[in-house]
Amino acid sequence: MDDDPATEILEATYRALCQHGYADLTIKDIADEADRSKATVHYYYDSKQNLFTEFLDFLYERHTEQLATIEGDTPRERLGALFELVLTDEQANPGQEFRTAMLEVKAQAPYDDAIQTRLTWFDEFLFERIRDITAAGVESGAFDEDVDPAVAADFLVTTITGAHTRRVAVDYSAERLYETITRYAEDHLVADEPTEATH
Amino acid sequence: MDDDPATEILEATYRALCQHGYADLTIKDIADEADRSKATVHYYYDSKQNLFTEFLDFLYERHTEQLATIEGDTPRERLGALFELVLTDEQANPGQEFRTAMLEVKAQAPYDDAIQTRLTWFDEFLFERIRDITAAGVESGAFDEDVDPAVAADFLVTTITGAHTRRVAVDYSAERLYETITRYAEDHLVADEPTEATH
Image (cartoon, rainbow over all chains, first blue to last red; front, side, top):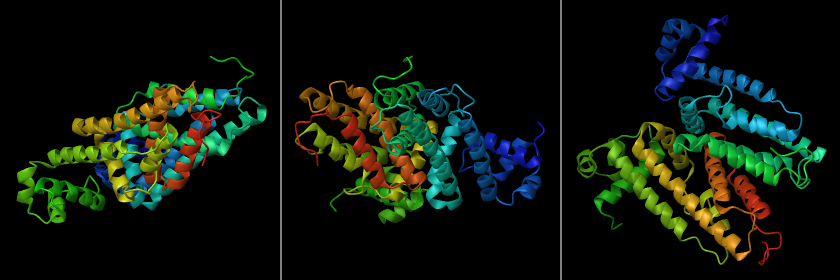
């Protein structure tokens, strides 16, 4: 990789987080994973908290890039592609270890403003993306005209968040959650006589 | 209180958990909160893991009792009462500290079978309760005949779980989540011409 050391350390943080979880994660774990000394890590990031904040910014950038490149000719296809990206393991998606660590990070949010701020960015970005796709669907007539894009998006962000939590807490099947949420969109967002064929 | 010492220790565990979180919780914290010695706590519960498993059983019993006593003459009223119980702070509901600690516990589930088993009980009980209320609504004609009670319940459990996570992770408003989910039920479950008046 041509990454600079600072970025390599963030990549190593990802792997160390999956392996150790958030509570037990140390600068030493990250240094070991990056194959660098603790002093080098400290040179780029002066504390675990500072490193972790930068790490969340790094994840946010990657996540928003992924969400921005969602493809589909129609709002319905784009919403389907978004669900697939955030709910299934089909794409370059995180594994169970990473999801578990992120749930641990979410439980830290009330005690750490920098973490809560960044989690709010993720939450809002997903909300805006779904709201915009839904608004485009309503405008084009493909979605039901009674759908309020902001209310639908808020509801779907809540459901997607719940899907992530249930996968960790009760080992719930990703496929089943994906099907349930897709069915919701087909039944309650898409207009009764859509212009494109189903399935 | 007339509680036996074993139950008093579980009550103290609740308070200690709210104060210290799960990762940092020690038998000493619980003993201090119960105003008893560590030896006494150990007499009743031989390890933190064992105590915590019993604590989740104790919470489960209380939670299922609350959910069992939901009142309402119609399925629609019962579903509304259930949303109020699990989503708002109107009733004898846990505060933000407890919700945060429980999110931390959920992130432990993949590493602890006893915890995951109990979280699955909570998840399934809520699912069954919503499924049964929804089925009664469909049967009575108050809910849309096209609603599949199991699919609707699965979706609502996911959304309720997401509501709990968002409250902790992004400090999302309980009222807004309650309104969104109630509106979903009114729009998508309740039949277009319900027999009872709205609001």
